[in-house]
Image (cartoon, rainbow, N blue to C red; front, side, top):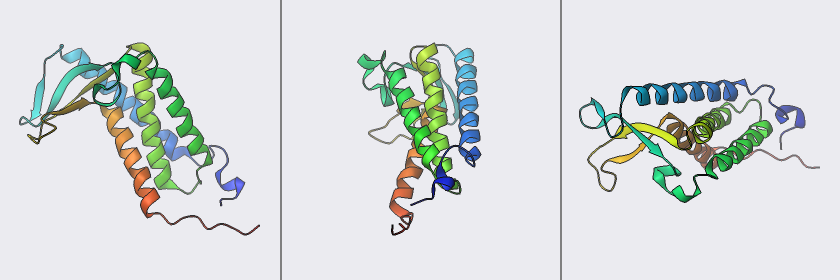
Length: 170
């Protein structure tokens, strides 16, 4: 178990906090730029017909699921962000991989929280079509969603492959 001075608080966790701020800035800027440039149902392919932009408002969670909970979703996202902050607060200062994972998840959550409270829905725009069933095309997503997925993936890999912390006898 980590000594309290190694984990308590946010001191030494600047990597996660700076990464979260960068993700929020990139997410909100990219959403704003695409939604200002393209109208509803318009799409622009940037790389062949496999990657492009199209503005889509998502009232639900991942891939539009649970749209009937759209009024509650911003609050559930706030709760999730608080949980991530508590995890970060308890993380070891030298755990840079964990800080990266939590920073990605936190930044993505905040980007989607902003949309939920200001737009009432999440703005998605990244369009990927690899001509592969069952995702043909893949559901439209955004930078925040990408950061959350990568962060959760890193957390899962850490659980699978990191050595458990040695516990000290009492």
